[in-house]
Length: 441
Image (cartoon, rainbow, N blue to C red):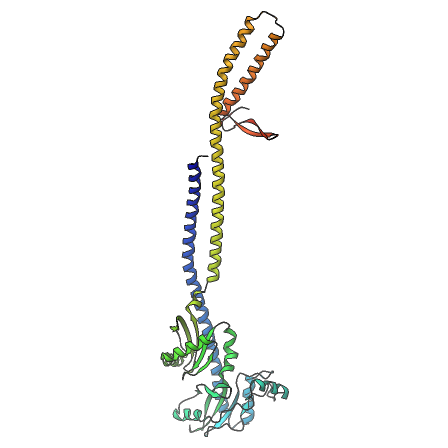
């Protein structure tokens, strides 16, 4: 085959492959940006939905306690106080002794809990916990039977400072082994004078475990009160984020938005901001529970950039495989094309050569035939073997002429060579009519 033809064929195959690669690469880059943006938007929607759910759950937990303490205040004086506290607590405990609050009590103006106080050591039927179960639970919570603070004077002071206040939620307070907060309703006489309050005490860690933790797998989350006390941080990233959030002065602004939202009848406020965590950039998404608590999720840029990466990797692998298959198909097609081209060139050369050979043989045969006919006419009638030899020569000349005619048809494309068999190491061919040319066999 002509070397230039060979190089041109492979150059064409390479050009087609490169053009296809450019199309695939362009499609990948375009879809990559689109897919990452879509994945990031979907991820942010999921984060927002999860934060909204936590905000609603915290709000419900808060207002359940606010409603129950307010109801208890209305029943004070007309209901056995200790029984009232126990009947309220049974709504928060489970048969296995687990409770989402630590206890409920009535406090006087001195800020101390009255003897009717009830710690969460009863089951959902209001009966005392089994001693073995109680002992088991106290291994994890040694304070279980006596969770009370030394004084709740801060609750009384809050209601004295604001005679119109209908409920109170404290910041986080350090207690043995945990942080707690108190939800309270004021107890006033008919003239509006403060007599005390009904409180429910909860541990922020327990509230987190019951309400938020089930949805925090692999999430950097923190929970803080309105004073800036960090109640929960799921990892070091969350702790750093909370520290930066507090130092930036964003907490008072968030709580102001939460108060405004609560006054409008909403669960609280929400927002997002960008933080610098060391050498990384992080995105913070937060929600408030009114103006009491704030829960936030923080994600670094690398984590956000990973959204949709699995799908991108799969698409890239498919694109690469497609390109390899396309290159392989192009190479195979080019190889077949070049072989076919080589065959066609060989056939063309063969036809030209057979045309030349048939012409030269026909000329020589004409001379031989003429000489043979001359000898036949010159010789007397019956010359025995000599006459027979001249006849046989004539037959051979006719056979050669038939072969010459076949070569001429081959050179003109009226017939083609087809494989006929194998004799030793030699391949045998025969002529077959070319129907496209209308040849005869």
